[in-house]
Image 1 (cartoon, rainbow, N blue to C red):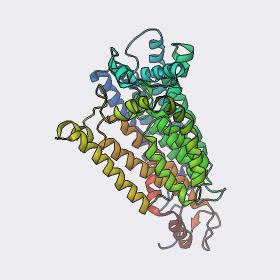
Image 2 (cartoon, one colour):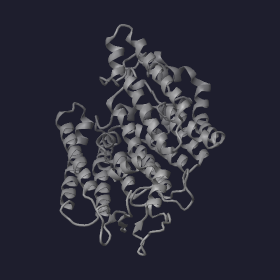
Image 3 (cartoon, rainbow, N blue to C red):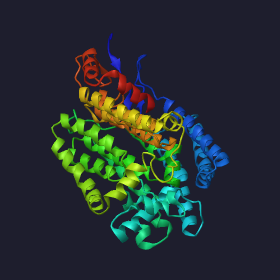
Image 4 (spheres, one colour):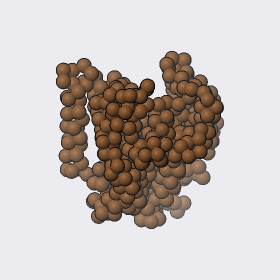
Length: 478
């Protein structure tokens, strides 16, 4: 680098403005975040409109009709902001909040109210399954039916409960207090996800993670806004919240575990991912990745202790009284060996192999196992060193699993979407970005008296510490 690098001064909104006598390298307020928002909300409106018009599922159609009225005004508001000068972070955040309410909370509550009033087709099967499993757990001590009892039901599919025993907790309000809109399992899925996301955001805003001092920078507001958009506004996630919802607290707990791992709180990370593992098997691969991460920091025992508490508290009592029910529902049905076929039949590679190749029902699980062995070997040789890299490992592993599972659906891809969304603030909190970390006060002999210039040595030291590539990727999406 030649000469000094001139950096824009951060404004109250967190976005930099060009300094006086800006050089060609000055950081200026960019319209890129607004342009990304405009594309995001516009494409989401198209998705919602298409869902309302062409889906064959009534809950999805109702969500699409309501959500279209949320995404389209958001796109119009962002288009108006593009014509304005200056930083617009607060307005962008308000638009995101309003959109989340319009496309997630409002359709969920409307469908819950109609369902409590006796309307049918206002929830997907998993809502009925979770609430029925809670009632069964209170009555018998097990949330499961055996395969022979399921086969005798008028609708055998609704007899299967493919979740871990902990998922039944979300059905307790309905089981204890009857059918009301506020006892609908989806309401509690949403509340749990909001609580986990808020806690994760608070942890990442505080900084002080691996490789940082307690006074280090936390994640910027821009990356955190992207993460919250991915969780509560992205169409597949909003649709899942409104119609089914059971995957959302699971992925939100994964995010919370990653945030705790970033702050080097191994026991809390174990508790969070253990709670997710008590809900769905999808969380177990993430637990393995986090184990490799905390192992490097010497916190493996505390992590495993935290993980064991919620898993043991929810699984051991059920396995003690009904191990067969657990196998019939969680293992056999998940691998496609139930008395009825799983509705998870999206045409992804694992399903296509199992359905159309000779001995495909054996080949597909073998491919899934091979992928697991390869990823485990790579983890052993190159374990994650930060929570951000662990998030990428989790994204890759879950994507491979969803592509190769014999029973799978496109909706499962919300897991990689949410994890990638939270990779942005995780990476930002670790490495800093051009609008925050450069102002941590690295001294420079040729710094100007106004504090706006940093010399070659300062910038070189920062790049050695953080690496320019990933931080610039975070900055681009900010």
